[in-house]
Image (cartoon, rainbow, N blue to C red; front, side, top):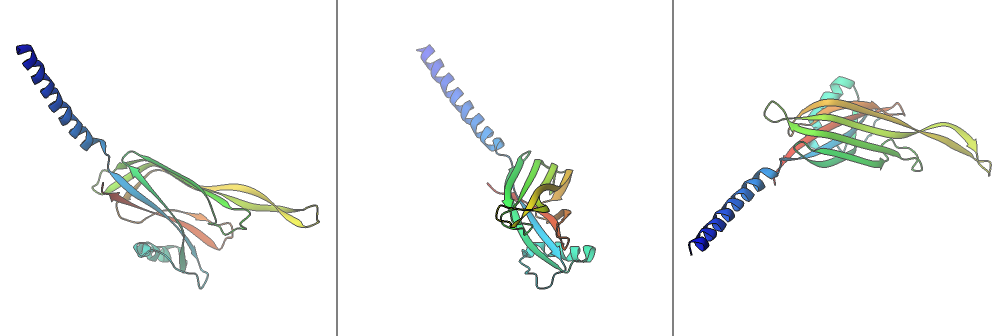
Length: 198
């Protein structure tokens, strides 16, 4: 009888310990998560450019007007992803970002690695940030069997790579610029990182 009681007590203690361990594991296992938005703005001096920029980016565009002198900005695209603490995010897709012939689309990619809290409250840092695009460049023309001229297209790589990038939560941050092949516009990469609830 004593052995049965001891066994019963042992099972009860084990169950309590396992439940407690499971509860603490469940609370500590979920890392903080963040929504990362990469806004791709195009700046130019073209009149009549439609301005469909989110109001949250107005402070950034005002600063850009004074720094780079472009009079108009438009939102060319937004990439949104979710990352956990110490997480990575990789995005690859085709794009009409550069406005070329639909037969020769561009390809863009975004890589973010090792998101971590910074030393200051509300600060975050990425170990690596990489934004790139493969864009079609017409290098010449050739005649097809019907005698029509067809473009000869090569894809060239452009991009921006940075290590140990720091941003603040809920603050749109300019990460860098890229020139556009047409020469009339410039790309501005602006990131906003927002903490998410469960």
